[in-house]
Amino acid sequence: MRKTLLYASLIPLLAACAQEADPPAPETAAEAAVPAETLETPAPGPAVSEMVADEIPRRAFFGDTHVHTGWSADAGMDGAVTSPEDAYRFALGQEVTSNSGLKAQLGRPYDWFMVTDHSDGMGTINEILAGNPEMIADETIKRWYEALTSGDEKRAAAAKSELVVMQSEERLPAVVMDPKWMKSAWEKTVQAAEDFYDPGTFTTFIAYEWTVNAGGGDNLHRNVIFKGTGDQALQVLPLTTFETQDPEKLWEWMANYEAKTGDSLHAIPHNGNMSNGRMFEESRFDGSPMTPDWAEQRQKYERLYEVTQIKGQSESHPMLSPDDEFSDWDLWDRGNLILNPKPEGALPYEYWRPALAAGLRLEDSLGANPFKYGANAGTDTHTGLSSTEEGNFFGKFKTLEPTNIERWDFPLLTGPTDAYMGWEMAASGVTGVWSTENTREAIWDAMYRRETFATSGPRMSVRFFGGYDFAESDFDGDWVAKGYADGVPMGADLASGPEGAAPSFLVAAMKDPESGGLDRVQVIKVWVDAEGQAQERIYDLAWSGERQPGPDGKLPAVESTVNPESATFDTTAGAAQLTAAWTDPEFDPSIKAVYYVRVLEIPTPRWTLYDQVNLGAEPGPDVPLVHQERAFSSPIWYTP
Image (tube, rainbow, N blue to C red; front, side, top):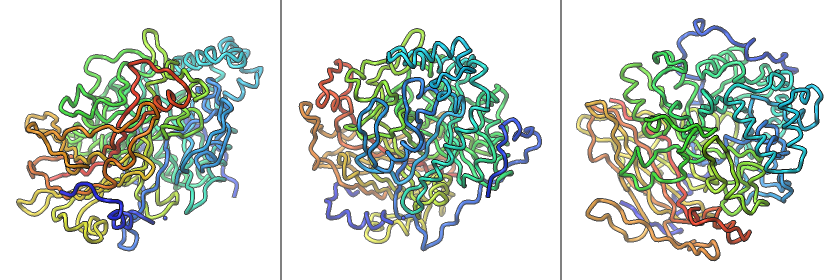
């Protein structure tokens, strides 16, 4: 086992990680659709670049897959005025003016980025704010217009909450659903992505969010990401939930688009913690049984899953993982998007870890694993400002930007009996992609093959390979090349090995130079036992300091160095990097299993502590001020 390494020994790891005509008229989604029965069984997926020896991904590129600007109806209703251009400039590290008038600038630019404004109501908010007579002829929209132009932030926030509820319950005014408002906004969104795309330096993706709030607020949203060009994307208009709320119909729309344009798409489901048990329900959307074709379509078009974002995490939950002392973080578990309470038994169908186990079981009956998801994270900011830096966090909505020094106690989402408050926001998350270069094609391909990892914000890096012949000595050479040559990377399948051989893994994590040191690296294994029950086990592989596991096998917690008076911490504490070669000590070659890596930082100040120190805020005693940032690799699936 290798433990703490000095900064001087970062050189080998760094070396292993460093590198880089007018379209046809748009169709509405309804016009682009074809009946489900005409779709053939899907091919394995879009063409993805083959890996060759001189094209090994050596660098992690960081980006955000989930960003809303003032062009999203709910963001604009809350007072956001940012445009896609503002979002891209901010992502590039340029100074912009926030929605509340603050000067805003990232400490570190992103490598790649996308704007994912809601397709539902795209283009309408600008018309409402402008007092479009056709819009405000509707009494509800007139009331929203008056709230938005009143200068009263709480009144505007209440109007935004009403919009979310009405969209969830399919009660929006008819004028909002007219696709004529979308065309201009979609064209400008696509053009902004094209204008800011700088291959090799800054990659942008054309994207949008399909916003399903089924059954009254059950969050089943997906972000749809285009691989290709604006000329291709402008041949259609985005799908809306006014046309369908069934994810299966979204996959059909995606298949039709690919056939029409030659482009490729994939969709990322949002974190399922607010789906009230529907994200990983074991049936089709209409309640009918899953089919092999349905499972194949889901696996083909949904490759990654959003493990963490501003609205909390969906890795696991203390009630699902009682032996995991790190499952109790950023929990949003009191209801769905409009605070309708969770039905009994909903939790197992909302989180990534139990879904990975369920996918193994379902694969036996369906022939395909519908829940074969890699790791993704995005902010879901509705400010246009993708800010995951704890001391530079602009919040989810305009009313929760740092001009509001009581934002921890300001309602973020409200329902009939409860509310999610501002302090519950997480300054999260970021996706790292192992790619050969910083281009649309290369990064999209890496996402599609699930060679990704998710972080709660910091830009720590994680590598993970599985095979049958890995050892500690591999780190003395080009271990990344050996990982690809003799095994598979994260996101891939590992077949049976030589008779009697257990899988071995190479794991490496490097700290974010601008964040805390590393506490530990773990492998989390999930499988289904002979009785069909999901099982999980967590292994500590490497850690900082001289700690040793106790009699219960648990590694003692790392000591916190956070100074609550200054929101500082010991930047020399923890490990700069951690590596381990590990062999599964309880391997049964006849049982399918999933393995993924979790990396934890030492305790560091949360954004609420920075608000307390820098803004004079006075969060209550229940508000967390310190946390442990973390990262998750995409899994490796062992299949006999």
